[in-house]
Length: 133
Image (cartoon, rainbow, N blue to C red):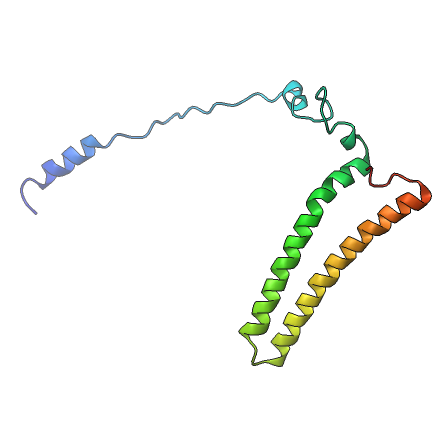
């Protein structure tokens, strides 16, 4: 320790400024008018207002997102199954597990696709509007 050590420490302490003890937080007041301005059912001339007014319309709108997500899920599961089969090709159990995973991915996608077309056929046969389109 040098004789100047306390002087250096006191200068360092003097240079450090404490943080602001009272930070300001700006809150946005959420009123019913603000929420209504984002609701597509209440916006005038909204192109989706009529579609989202019925459960069938909501389901039809969701189907546009469900099929791409199901395809992506099938793709990811097939890649995982492939890595599982290749990664531990020495054991019969891991190969079987990978095959089962791949089969389940393809069968699940086929069931989803078939259920959509069954509903579409029922709409045409019985003149119903289930999916809203």
